[in-house]
Length: 313
Image 1 (cartoon, rainbow, N blue to C red):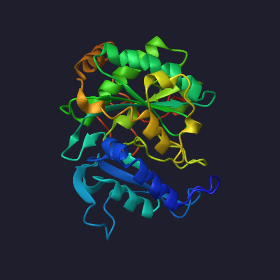
Image 2: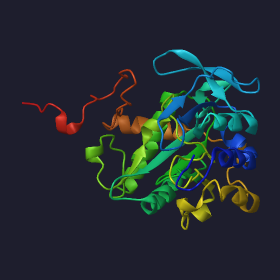
Image 3: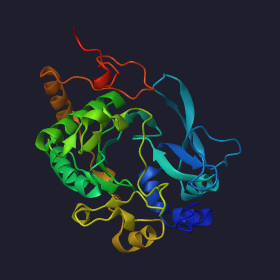
């Protein structure tokens, strides 16, 4: 599966067994998309959402509604065996929704993807994540951190599942804009790449319905089989994402434990962030662009990059 690292599908299956409890705690009972490959990670990649034919009885599905308003069943992982079954089909990356299977319209996680742009790297994302933790704390939320498994960082906050995806997206935008105000030279919320510069991009569109990021403890399709690994905030300053792989993370769980085990014990509310959103809207900072596959959304600006926009005469 990972030719450069010399790791096989059996290594992947054994990894998912070894981290099974933490993996299911983080990704279970959620609609999940499977990022699969034809052969190794160097082969063709495709996403699998609907349950494939021949799925075993212990792999269930749940109906979800997509941005197009269509509804289809989506896979759910309830036990490590389901993840191992997915690995048998060359699944490398697991993409869980931010909502639970029994309430798929209302996220119980606020997720913020800190994405290093050209000219920046993982080290540049660390101070942005630390300041974002303060931003979320000011809004009454408790933040959790993990590596993306590549160059970035993912910041999560558990929330009460009472708001729909669009509201949570607005809360993420509000948090991103506040972070950008505090670190204007290091952070950007600019959707168009030509406007981002060498800064950390707050990818607010990952908060949309049916937009997902690699789950906690999910392997990634990178040469050394790195894992999207939860960390404590105290570890972040010296963290090296290259060290968290399917070879090393099982032993880490045995010695360090799971920093995300109690994430949902005390969920917070996004009310303050939504107040910030309304404040910013009143100040002329309205809706942001949506991904290209989404229908045109209310209040959305034109979906054209600034350099190609028609200039007023």
